[in-house]
Length: 148
Image 1 (cartoon, helix red, strand yellow):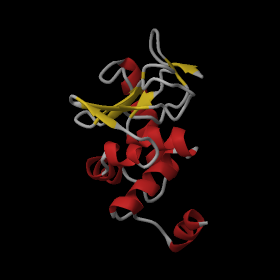
Image 2 (cartoon, rainbow, N blue to C red):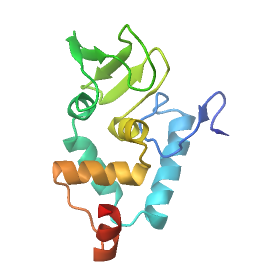
Image 3 (cartoon, one colour):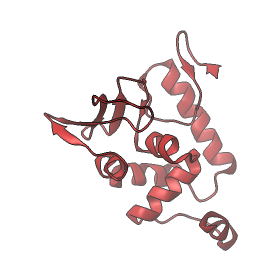
Image 4 (spheres, rainbow, N blue to C red):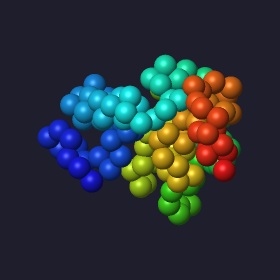
């Protein structure tokens, strides 16, 4: 865990859509992410990430794992990250975020895949890009490594 900003602890600085969007915490994590993309995440550019985020419906991705029920603008269900009997897991498709008010987990579509499937950021982007037909700029070797 590292401290970013005055009162914010982040375990994964690569998660773009945190709850502190616009603040120092979000700007610092965004800078770390973009530096990582330029330095070693071949095939995944900021344009690819933006395109995947635009095409990927968080409601559809979460519904593959969690049974959701519509409640007003949001959808809610049982949290996949902890045991509960009363739904406290909320998905807001307009904002493209999820939040569990029981365990505190939250984030965007990439963060959900990271936490639910145990993927890192790059693999979650690739997984969604493949699902939604967003082409990646990769060499043949990188594709073979990802398909394993």
